[in-house]
Amino acid sequence: MYLQALREIQSEGVSVVSSEEFGQRVDASAAQFRKDLSYIGELGRPGVGYDVAALILRIAEILGLTQPHPLVLVGAGRLGAALCSYPGFAEQGFRIAAVFDNDPTKMGRRLGENVIRDIADLPRVNAALGCRMGIVAVPGCVARDVVQAMVEAGIGWILNFAPVAVGAPKGATIRQVDLTHQLEVLSYYMTVAKHGTDPEA
Amino acid sequence: MYLQALREIQSEGVSVVSSEEFGQRVDASAAQFRKDLSYIGELGRPGVGYDVAALILRIAEILGLTQPHPLVLVGAGRLGAALCSYPGFAEQGFRIAAVFDNDPTKMGRRLGENVIRDIADLPRVNAALGCRMGIVAVPGCVARDVVQAMVEAGIGWILNFAPVAVGAPKGATIRQVDLTHQLEVLSYYMTVAKHGTDPEA
Image (cartoon, rainbow over all chains, first blue to last red; front, side):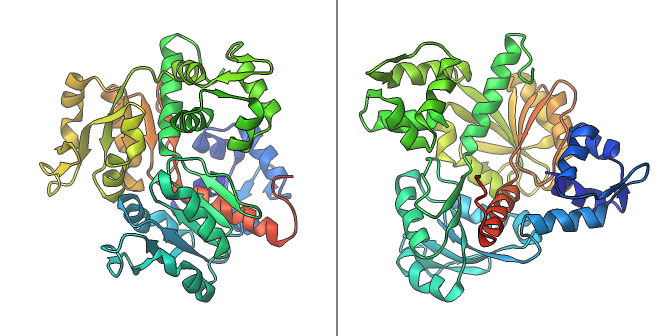
């Protein structure tokens, strides 16, 4: 979140930012920002502020974002197509290097810069590509099998958009993006607000 | 997360679940599960387990999910189209009741069950619909203006897919879904793993 906000600030031509200005931007307190940044070193100058470019570089280093990450995408449906054209990915060094599906009518078609390949070819193709990160955008009923196949093909860091929670196979890391879950959280806030209680309290 | 896992368990025909079985399913400890559930009442029976249907209903009540939520979607691009066809939404009572865009070439076309409308008509249309929840799937450069317009039209609970953090206008609640952010978290885990440290430690 900080990295994103800092990039926005940089794109506006600002080179030094105070913790107060920054806190307003991200809806965090200046104290919280200073505390969080204290974990990664002495980057601010009292009375002056933080060097935006230096801070971006430091956070990007910590997140492993100073080198590009090629990704494998499994699932060439509507969500997969939307992810292929999501501008934020390429901007931050995440490039979709190969797209797979199990639907024969999709194989061979283009999706963005990629040709859709047969999921059965994943092990062979990724042996050549060497991708270690991947995105799952398949129906929930096949998500577990797809994750297992990806991990066996060497893809151990996976972002799962399928609407089922998939446990991580041994040695793998899975982040679940459940779009419905976010709406359920909003629904909760709305319900609490109706009953006159502050959900943030 | 619990609700999703419980629904999966229910769909498999299981009516009673122990905290140990459940913990394995969601990658949480049985103790954590029992602790979390203790906040919402005495729902488990020692030595027997939890009634799956009763637990689903109780969590759904707390989340305000026992009644349907009509939604407004702003942004009829690829991501908006993918969200319109995302199966999880309708299954959980989230129905997209109206779709808006500012592109004249899109207006009047169909997107799923909806006709794409002019964003300028949002206040008038939502005065009739009365939607209080909405989804933003527009480019980052217009996200703030779109959120402001939605809040003014009575849509105070917003899920923002635009790749910029938008502060909540007064009285509104915004949840940010930053797809790139999730990849950045994965990148961090991968970086830490390379250096031989367990990121979960």
